[in-house]
Length: 363
Image (cartoon, rainbow, N blue to C red; front, top):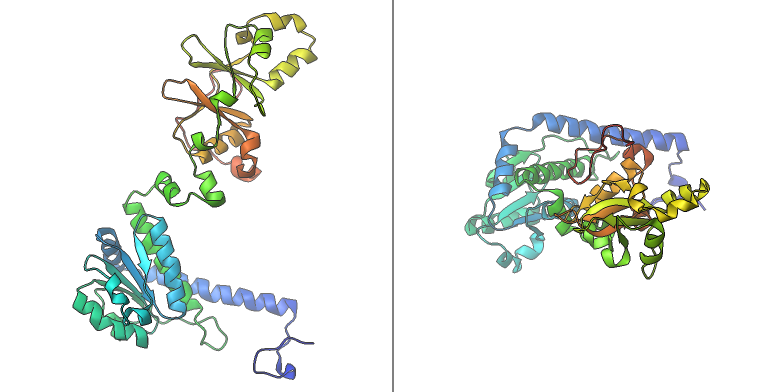
């Protein structure tokens, strides 16, 4: 049985080859991308006024719109909220049936309507004016009913819908969404919103895991192998045992408890492979990696993961502000967060959380 559009007979369907489908898909994307490029070129002082409204808001940004514009508004609201600007959505039809009580004079109304004449939105405007709430409008025409009532208007202009009938909101909703992103992200930059701030609002999922602090993921010191650097290798191997799954490295500390070096299972394997059994009774400090790379407590896990990938290391000690070890990040615990080869080979920004190699030392 052939698929056909609702309300049509099977014989009325438009059969398309895979090549035609791809060609039409590309055409739609090109129409929308051209509109975005044109819109970017038309941004003017109204955009700055809009950003200032969002930046100065003492209450919340209340986002409203009907139909597809309302759905776009929900995404804009979510972007604002997650990047440092308090925001909520309000359905325009529900607003005039009691939900106007959610709006406070300290708020800003962000109203989306391509035509600027949407019935439910227009009905809402007198009440917003009475409440004295600034209105930021994203609409096609400044001289529409919405445009005339707004405090600030971002004018989208004439937009060609990508729909073959020229009816289904497509390019226009893409434009609204893009403008909303621009407003939210510029405002976020002005607030000096940082990754640490972003992490507070995203504690769950893969993104939230990356944005955790290292001490939330590390193996705590009580589960790590720690020994004095002046102990012999044999003594360390006997004494530095811990219950449960062990890490593949031993952190060596000086008499003051500060991290002096690290000795890995690979170091031990090399000794055995070279048949240097007598070396088991010399101080382990002779074979440890002195001044190893570390990550400071309070840093984001993503910093640690990036460093481990860049430097191709499997264990990364976590230290406090006195350089005393408090735990360790083991690659087996974060392997799912490791960047791909192309990403990890990119230039790593300067970080104060790790020690630079000494002259002549392998990176």
